[in-house]
Image (cartoon, rainbow, N blue to C red):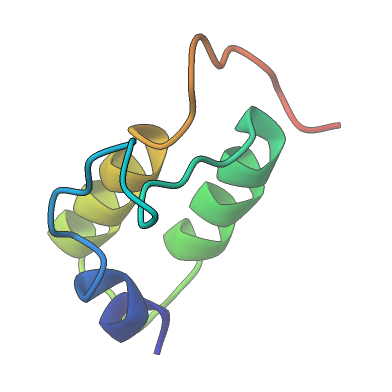
Length: 66
């Protein structure tokens, strides 16, 4: 279900439009772990989703979840 939802958001969104959005580094880390554990996604789908969500994190993201 997550993959289907994110597939509809993979189109390029201009940040100045009402559809531009960002996520925090911590939220991205949590989502990337959830995506990695999803047995319904293959390796390439996981990599693409994680990469797309990373593009929504402004700036550096070198944190580690504790």
